[in-house]
Image 1: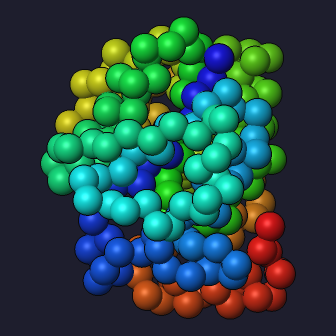
Image 2 (image 1 turned 180 degrees about the vertical axis):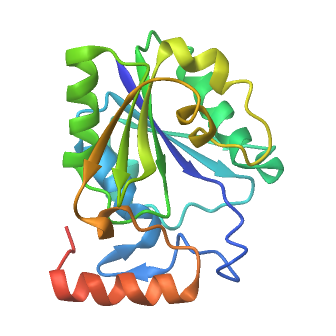
Length: 203
């Protein structure tokens, strides 16, 4: 089995306020990537949020999906690695072969991207399989269970990307840079809003 770890416990400091509940097309910003994860071939999707998040950015339809699992990371303020480890520990209570780490502020990630990571893993069982855009490795990334101990050693804001620099694996280069945009600032948000209007990307 392969589980998704959907990291949604950030502080949105560069945005100046909570960003996952911002309107984007016909959904909230944070629901886009979650929707893609739930439609993918992942067996379960663990959404990791921080304390006090009302989850109003998640659609009622998403919450009703049998793949949807939610957990609160009480130490999320200590850095992104805390949320990742929290989600991974929950995932490890099941008999899983790998996880796919996704960020909630990447609304243009598609189910096809997630599915390709999973398909490549099932054909090869690499240590990891990561996406790349403009020759820069970016989430989402799939991690084999052999790397779980190393992931659990991460601290602070040293996320999974740190491992990708030190362990051999497979990197898939994608041509559409927009798919991997993460929304950190108001300017990012405006850019993606305009992009969605152009592409009519409201699935």
